[in-house]
Length: 569
Image 1 (cartoon, rainbow, N blue to C red):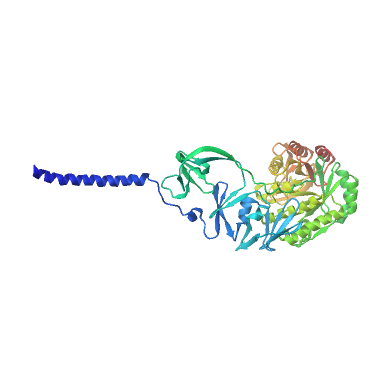
Image 2 (cartoon, rainbow, N blue to C red; image 1 turned 90 degrees about the horizontal axis):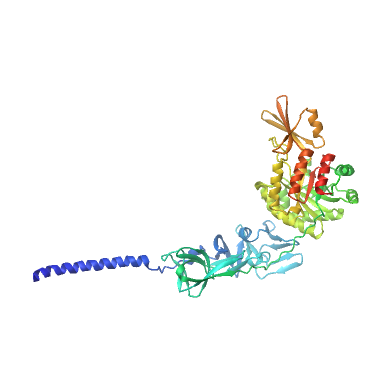
């Protein structure tokens, strides 16, 4: 028996050792699985910053863009400012100027300068306002705040930015714990949380919640460590109070007739044009056109013309365009070169306003067509600077625009709706001379939808829709398409001459006719009193600010009477 025990005891001991070792191993695994990790996150890596860079927390999310700390000042690159804070800053890299135009002034900063210029003179700053680094312009956060309602708080590795304020939910920390990168006890620790500390609740899940600390570190904490759910009303920042964009609006609706003048002799046709366009309260002669890349313009203006119009109670808004002289002479006039140079652009603005005041014009109409997207920013800055001068001199500023689509959004109707007195939509050219694609000049869907898109961006009382008092005859022979204009006052005779009888088309709300001339198919979507009446009804239902007509000399008494009735003039 003793010998048996001697043999059994070692076996039992071995088995016990195996059990103990197994238990220890299993317990270790359980410990590894259920114990809280003490690993701490590398905050530089977490925020993705090196050197003098600072991560940006915008509202409750970290954005891709970063700020720069230079000396004691924080800077944003201009693209970040445009994207998130204020798109109004204008950069002229050639003249090394940063501009900001308000309702009543244009403020100018030279790159690298510690000060800015406005209408009241020079103002110094303790910091460099902006500087170039590589191909990027950096602007001081404090300077941006002079024109923008936003707040920022600076921490070691990041900034907290707020541009919106509302009601947030908060919790208190019930027991000392940790804020982790992700929801889970094995996730690295971002920072310790102490009992009684308040955190903002961003997202609540089953066992963990996404929160933001008072120093704007966003991470996760266990729900069991949260207590005392509450709400907090954030206080908006209102440091910047912008000047009011006042408008010079007419009493009642605008009833504008464009007067196409190709030379000084064209002014002699004023009486006949006013006799035709009975009821108009604004006439817009096409007097001024850019002649070179220095911002010069030619003028057919006549003070006698203006005086005669005024005696009939009609305002005169002189039209400045960027194409007539170029088309007439073949001159190389680049809208980009004129508008992208601050010196040339501002000289043009001063000369336009000085000319208008000297002549006694009531308003200025800008008709810059054919612009490409790269000109857009400069064109908008031109309109802003011009609006300041018009506003201070009580000149009406109206701007002509294509029917808005995604591809011409750079004309920025939203900004025009703020800075201009009237936004004129040229409600035609759905199909245009030379496009090679027969169709209506202005179908009712094209007009109505274009006005809807405009009204999404421009106050209704500022919107003026321009009607086409013309149409196009299209001739298709094989693959060749040619076209010719026919004016409203000639279309009936034209159809009679070609022996065509149009029929009403409910889709376009126009009379349509087609006929053969030899092997050619001729088509016309007629603009006449019937089609004009439908357009005016749509305009009336949308309660817009007025009507314009392209152009005087093209209309019929019936069509003009419809326009007068719409405008109430």
